[in-house]
Structures are given as structure tokens and as C-alpha cells.
View 1 (cartoon, rainbow, N blue to C red):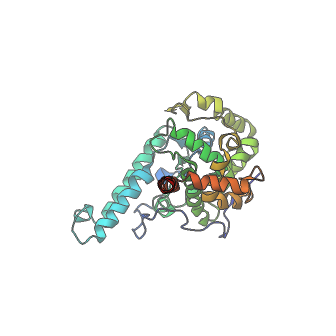
View 2 (view 1 turned 45 degrees about the horizontal axis):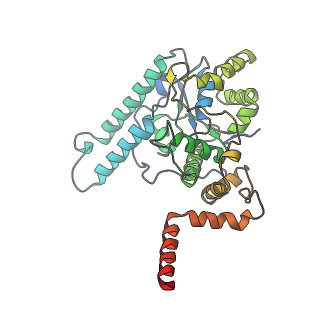
View 3 (view 1 turned 90 degrees about the horizontal axis):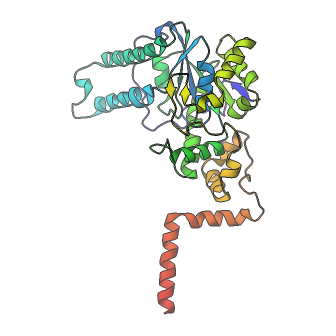
Length: 344
């Protein structure tokens, strides 16, 4: 079982890795500096399709936890508005909200948005003393989260990237067609970026917990108990059984998250690990390896030669992958046409 807490800085946790180039820095902190509505706060972070929704279902069923479906508050609202503010503040042409608000006034309004938004979440379970938000694939920078929610805890769920890629591609053919990557190389980058960005929260000693989807799947009770201990939540045996029952995959396949939010058809797949073995052919495995093989190896999921299931794959698969590149296919067609002309 692999559960890791951040205690001191480690070389495997590199602050700033994987965040967006447009991430916001340099703005003053939000004025409140207080926990949201007097409650503790926890983020579930990591790559999309890593089991973060399942973990949210398990934790969100706890009587002391209030949660909701993804608000995307920071990724789609707060971070873009902060980037826009910084852009207009530095622009030589007078424009934007800096014309009518001071920076302190602007931050106060964003702080109010955050407070009010999570206040609505708390209304669903007023007795809760913790608010839980799931923000997979968040790459806006933990600095923004810390401005508004100082002292928040981070639970990072990591899943084998090959299973994540397989799940992303399946989503791209249905409910996730508007956002999910459609090929393995893009899916591998998606996973790598999501993991590396989430790991930047490891800079906060005592507030970052890293665990594996496969461990949670194989030993749900013990791993869940460790998470509850990290979050300082009640974890008696009866309560653990209730949480596990509420987070069953067959319940989630019925289309409800936390008993209130509709999940799209196909969102919950098999609930198993190692689906990639039957879903990713050799050429796709090699494409994944090129994009994210190092991270996969660093995390202990595979060695450097994992993509070669046959001895002859060492040469044949890289060649087949190269020939599958659109640019090279076009060049080969041109050469073949020229060759036919010369021979004629």
C-alpha cells in the first residue's frame, strides 16, 4: 500500500512543475485569510479519470463532509479573471477592470465569490465541518488556491497512466467528446501534466497526501481509514462500512454522485485496474512511453521496456509508430509518386 505524506521537501515534488504558462503570480492575497465559513477545506487533486470521483463519493458520504459536483470555480472563473486583471494592469492601453477597481477591491470581490460559492455547497449539509472540492487536471497553480483557502489539505490520487489514457480515449468517444484527448500521445501528456501539477502541493508539509488508485481499489477499507486519519475525520468501523457502501461502483453506475448530481452515461466504466493490457495495442503503448514513460517508471508502474511484449517489438513497433505519423506518411507518398514517374 502506497500512501505518502509531505513532511519535508523532496526531489520528487518539484514546485512549479506542470503548471500553465499563464498561471497568475504577484497578486495580493484575498482579504479574508480565513477558512471558508469557519470550515476546514480539502482538495482532491490529480489527473482526470484517476478515480477522483470515486474518492469524492467515498469521502463526501461522511457526515462531517460537504461536497458537490465539480464547480470548476478556480479553473474556469477565478484563475482566468486573475489572469485578465494582470494583463490589463500591465497593458499600455487603459482597459479592463483596473479602470474602476483597485486591486484590493478586485480581490475582495473574488474572495466573496469563493465564499458564496462554497457557502451554497455547505447549505447541502450545514452540520459539516469540512468542505471537499474535487479539482482534477487543475493547472492554475496552487498559489491561487492558497490565496483564498490558506491551510487547505490536498489528497492526490494517482492512477496508472496507461489506464488513464485508455479511459480518456473511451470518454472522447462519448460523454467526454468535448474535452477528452482522442489519441494515446495526447492522453499521456494529459496524465503527465495532471500528475505533475498536483504534486506541486507537496510543498506544504503535513497538508499533502499522495496515494494510488490501485491500493484504494485493492484494500479500500484500510486505505480509506488512512485518508480519514490524515483529514482528522471520524473513522470507526461502522462508519467506514457505510462510506464504502455509498461509494460502490454499482451505485455510481446508476448515475448519481453524492445522491444528488447526475453522472453521464458511460462515466463509470469497469472499476478495475490494468484495462490498458487489453485496450492499448503495441503501437499505442509505445506512443504513451514516448510522452510519459519516464513518469510511469518513476512512479514504479513499469520499467523502461514495458511497451515491448515481444522481442521483435524493439524494432518493429518504433518503425510502425514512425510510419503512422501523418507528416511522414505524406512524405513517403510523395517519394513513391516520384519513384513511379522516374521508372516510367
